[in-house]
Amino acid sequence: MSTATLAAFTEPDRPKDLLIRFITVGGSYVDVTGPGQHSDKNRWNCHGCGDSSDRPEQDYLFRIRPDANGHAAACRAIPLR
Image 1 (cartoon, rainbow, N blue to C red):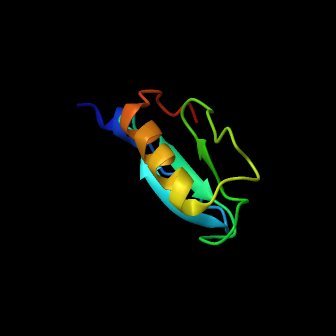
Image 2: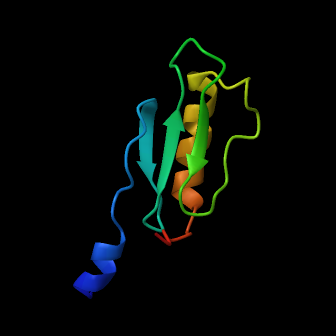
């Protein structure tokens, strides 16, 4: 495998409100951000394909953690930056 390919897959900057970061099968990242466990204002966003939570303002951490992890397990989009 080319080292140039590996160098292109660098971890993006971590936002201050990052709670969890999953790596996707395509080599990108899914970030779960927000105030934390007891808030309904958490959300997830995929750096590879751009998909995100579909229930903003209703996302308690215990609800979106499995969704974000499931997305990371299935997303094959590669990072373009």
